[in-house]
Length: 128
Image (spheres, rainbow, N blue to C red):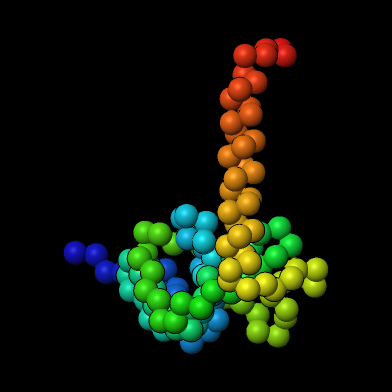
């Protein structure tokens, strides 16, 4: 039987230093969640208090409130602490309502889909 040395102990409790601090969590699907870390376990499952999803489209952003939020560890890509003293976003970003950001997301998705379909239509033209 082997015992965990100081290195292994540090790795297993590395989220302990973030308890009760404001974090940003990047998920596998690209969503960005902000909130205060309440709890975690050995699988990196985390519980955020006062969580919100930050949606950014171009120069627009919106923080969609979620409340108490449980995140399964396998969906976590990155966890980072936010500095409470600094502005989180550049000055040129504009805060908009949830309805407005959803419209902007839809327009961006439709433009991306149109670009992809145009590329498929033009594949028969071999420029190489």
